[in-house]
Length: 157
Image (cartoon, rainbow, N blue to C red; front, side, top):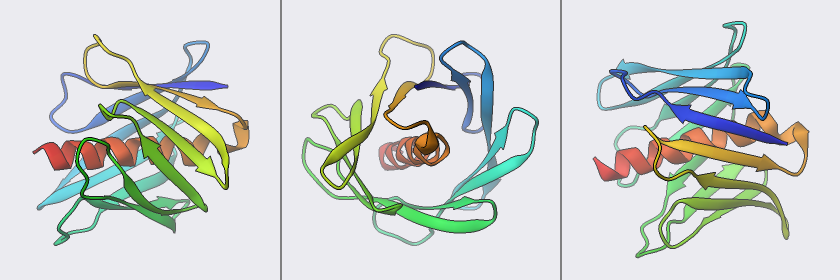
């Protein structure tokens, strides 16, 4: 199963549209402007808020808390590394590793890769394809990808 995450190019804040593999919109994300950080609200196709990604302030490296249904379920922090991006993840028992250019990521549960995330090149705005081994990981995997993109954007600012 796959999802396509497309960042809206002509938007004042970070906004994303998320589509299933048939091109149907399943989710969308809108950023809220707050002092010194990101706060991203995640909605289903019926405009119901289902989650939020909040940046922790006053941290050396980008750190984000992830909430689903009003309950904090984990956090992600970009680690200081050379060449290969790494993240400290306290999220659903998962770990994440990226490639040399930071455009492809695998999410592991134990020793098994459960989600593959790849960035499409030559597209307007950031565009990611998320390939899930288990459809039950869809929402949590999508939230993780958005948090990783936010951490990368924050680190590049």
